[in-house]
Amino acid sequence: MKQGLSLRVSQHLALTPQLQQSIRLLQLSTLELSQEVEQMLDDNPFLEVGIDEAPREEFGLSHADTQVSTEDRESEYATSTTSSSTDNTGSDSQMESESPLSPQDDNQNWEGDGTSEIAPDDSEWGGDAPPRTNNNESDGEVDATELARSQMSLTEFLHRQALALRLSEEDRAALRFLIESLNEDGYLEDSLEELAQSLAEPDDELEEIEELQHRFTMALGLLQSLEPVGVGARTLEECLTLQLRALADDEAEEEQEQIRVAAINMCACPMDLVARRDVKRLASQCRTSDTVIKAALGLIASLEPKPGRRFVDVERNIVIPDVIVTKVGRGAQANFRVRLNQDVMPRLKVHDIYANALKQHKGGGRDASVNAALQQRLQEARWFIKNIQQRFDTILRVSNAIVDRQKNFFTHGELAMRPLVLREIADELGLHESTISRVTTAKYMSTPHGTFELKYFFGSSLGTETGGNASSTAVRALIKQFVSSEDPKKPLSDSQLSDMLKEQGIECARRTVAKYREALRIAPTNLRKAL
Image 1 (cartoon, one colour):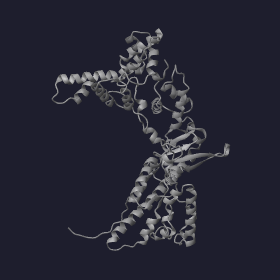
Image 2 (cartoon, rainbow, N blue to C red):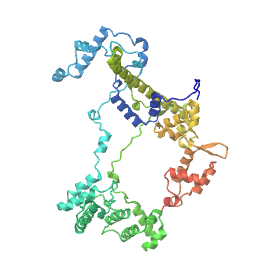
Image 3 (cartoon, helix red, strand yellow):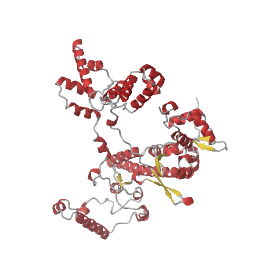
Image 4 (cartoon, one colour):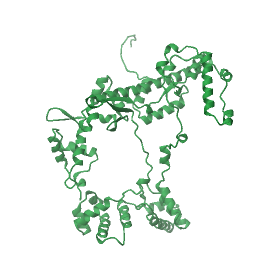
């Protein structure tokens, strides 16, 4: 084998840590970005939230190395002291215990405090933001999370009712165990035999297991007598039956009682017949008239299939828009202004005190490795701030491009939405399609017609008779409009909807109509038909 040297030129893309962080921040939602910022504030000492009033345009690089005069420092101290004394009027003891430091004490601190010398680059890295405060200290404001946590759960509600029952220790323990075994919908998924087996010891005899199962049977009857009605059911049929039996009224009219009994009998039939509202077969199996079956179906539809639904502590995610679009002007001169939501923008800056202390400290020997590590952390803070600013700049650019192309939507609504794909915005802004996809995912825009995800404004096109294109979003809105105005006794089929779209000049097949209808969560014809 002969060895030799050769030169070869090649190109490859290297994803630096800064670029990887930029891509990752771009695809995060507002909530995820907030969590990322909190984590970075905890991990990086050079990063802090800007709370001082320091507009960028008034703080140029030409003044970065200018020394602050002694008169200015004394004036600043006098102003802060006067403000502090004014706020604490009438509480002398508190003023004595929380008196500010004197100028002499301030001079004893280490010199790199950010007031005598400011790093040229660090001053340009952050904006301003109000200080983070606790909601408990605000005037009458209550945290929504605390309100959600204060909601009583289903198990707590049932335990409180069980305290009012006069039971023996064994029965109370059995009832408590059944309550804890319910799922979030209020159903008892495991059979009583399985629950008894789970509590039985390996050496227990069969009689002891049967005794435990008997205890659970008695406790189940008590559980199903509690509120909400239907709790403790094993199946949907049992849940509906419990609610129907609770509707029994001795003073009810004969017709109403007949409907209730028919509904109970229907719960004993296969539930797919009830779901399909097969009136003929239900009337045959329940041996009653079609009129009674239709009324019984209406009664069943008014029941609650999930008794524990209102007790579920569902995390309510409030959608906070990243971009706000407002209308400017009237009539033909109307225009739309796009701006970022300042409430979701983290205002970060490099900690001047720590940054300048690191700049003035020149360690050697053993301190060289520590100094290099701190320099790296400082650079990470700068890159993090830059990537966040770049993230919001990209969101604003994409939002402006969307608004320019979808002006008809902002003026007339979703029926005027035009077809739009990611490639059009990518070509206009000189970005990659994957970047547009990351920007439009989990980012929201507040518009005069509501709050929508940025991806909502993109949709495929359907051909029209005139040779133009119609947006799939507009077609879905048109289908929703047709269904909302239909006759409940004669609902429109998918074929009829397809024909109505053709009358509007939009070529849309029946299968496409069915797909759009399912996406809109509109039931098929047989389930929309009024009985």
